[in-house]
Image (spheres, one colour):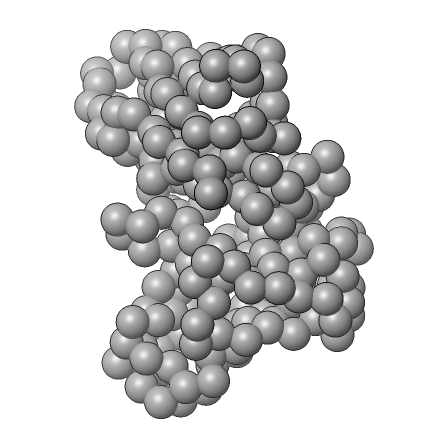
Length: 111
Length: 108
């Protein structure tokens, strides 16, 4: 088992507030990813990381920032949440041999 | 960039039926994965299959990389097979593109 933990699993917040989602892995894999899933859009990449302090943008990165200060943790931050960021957020790791494994997801509602 | 198309978008079957889901992609890829998203939202890796054929119980997958498509076969469907099936193609470790999925509903 890949050992990916996302927190919080559910969050309701108000427009304009900051939100941070955490992804924690137990196996020191190099690549980590944040996706969002919305009806009609499937899974879209927000940001990814290829090592400590090494991150890059995905296709829907506007309004999001990430940080990776330790191999095991990849944080996704919404500096000022908007209703369009209501979504389910999935963290994933590349567990070697280019096999993607997902966490359980974090459901975020922005009122 | 690479385009990924899955068909059909929706499929409703009776328990016990067989089904074939298709994933077409527009360029050569390094890897392809099939996922099942169950009704609780969990994304489960089914196959890692850049080419060839693999089988796991009632499920099997075939990727023909030279013709840029992959097929997922489900035999003797069960209600627990319901959910959305996604294919994802890799052109590199940072470029992973998902199809829009096939929603499968198995009726008892």
